[in-house]
Image (cartoon, rainbow, N blue to C red; front, side, top):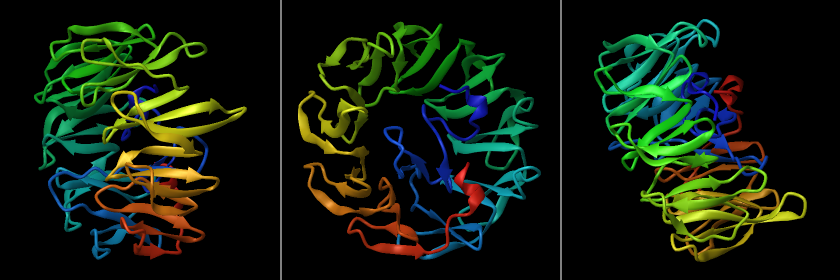
Length: 368
């Protein structure tokens, strides 16, 4: 996992190129499918659009809520969205509200989403700058002093100093000393941490609940976590519960974490051909491996690929939207971002476009 200070906005284990900050390429293949990253809380979601190289927002009906006028604008979180004014070399980051008004003036060299009322911000260049935390008024709650600060989760934020990771509370007090070689956010009350290339899990006190032993470990979700047993050449994946006990016996070549009660599985290999399907939390195969690529379920549908076209299936494996897209994202908050030929836009659960354009996404926004 790359050190987080080099990924100022992204926290996923594998995070390559991003289009508009809305979507991320599949880690399962080199196809053009994408997984939507919009995550909005307790408010009507807004979706990013573009015109003449600028970014704005629409609501779920396709109505323009904020006219395209920003060089880069990320999604809303805690009522505010990150925006950059100026180019990638000299531009500065600030925050807008849901009317598009700048409520925290652009002054930062890097920013993260607001969570639990605070946002991490960086002053200075990526290699030597320092991260602190601001509140919704833009006032510092934690002065810039860390090499990296992640978003808050379960009341704690991951921090990095001197290439070691630990955790601080909302006042900036270190509650778990930076001593880990890598680490993740708290989820389901536990955080994954790495020592000497082995992953385990700690509680909020920093005590090991599951000792470091895995070659890979995911966040816990719904009481289960995905781990890699033994090495990358001969090892295998497994699911563990919060005590570290193996929870599901599985016989597949590759598996994912669970989303909406189902996990992606893969049979075959890159030389002989691969197919993807889905299992439930007992390990039973619910949707037989038959797809050339797929993502986890989101908003009740899963993005799947047949040959070079993408479509969407329901929890039974039946197609809800037939494969037809050259580029597609998972559904989030009722919409999915797709492309057919030179037409880009958002579709609803019926497959109908609610917003579309033939203008390609702004070039710089392809690499967020």
